[in-house]
Amino acid sequence: MKKILFFLTLLVSSLVSLPSFAQAASNSITVSGSRFTYDLLRQWIQDFNEENPDAVIQIVPRETPFAEQANLVINAHNLDTVEIREGYEYIKLGRYVILPIANEQNTLARLYKNKPIRQKELKELYFDPFQEEVESSEIKRVKKQSIQLYTRQRIACANTAFAAYYGFKAKDIKGRPIAGEDKHLLYAIAKDTSGVTYSIPSIFYDLQTRKLKKGISILKTESLANAVATEKLDLSNLDSLTTYLEKNVTSADFPVTYFHISLKKDVPENSIERKFLHYILTKGQTRLHQFGFLNPEEPVRAQSIQLISF
Image (cartoon, rainbow, N blue to C red):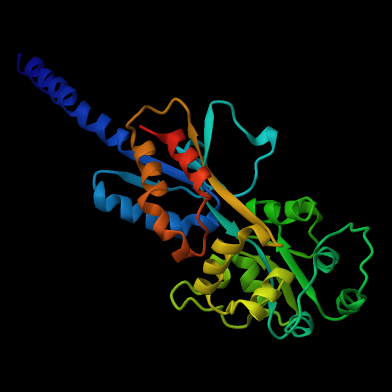
């Protein structure tokens, strides 16, 4: 009899505890995707938790076994048709730019310190094959000298977006392949005075001081060089760059790309996922500039809010 009572007690206890487990599960989210957005994402999670202390939101890096089961996945390039999964919404959260950068001591950085580098020259420098004739022989001359281009070994969001803007694939980017994340390209050129690469402001600016990281030079495109000369754009300062870009993004002659997050269409209304995304698209937008990102265009933001409305 005592054994029967013991097992009945266990059964009742387990039944009583079920709702708490269900509640915990309904308040849990895992997020995966593009690593260079993680600092911004961590800030969004922290801010959201201040208003929703019961929410449990974890970042799961793409390379880990649990990434496949993530509730939300961030991508930072325009998806091909084959990459779009049936049954998902793709919600645009913000934009970012990709700029050509170099170690400030190398020949290329010195050559273009006081003049712009044109798109034809950028294509000649970064891509292979490239058939279009470059009028100036300067890039060809410099390439014969000690210039080392670095690119990511793995095809990822940033190199895909960078190459697509110029009409190429990520595999067409020339240079020495570097394993790891986008930030490792910066480490490579910081150590190599001949180093040249492409990168994202949140990586090559110091987010605390708002200044360019030591030893890094932006290769000014024609629009940036013109803004430096006529609009007092200070490329050494992240806030100056983001303020300029928000007002002049349509005239940018370099990649400006949305990053978005995928959400299953059948996620219930009033779910923690939808609440979190709604927070990002409303209160969370104030964090974009802090981390070197740009706001979504207002019609795009309004459409994104509609997609996740609860």
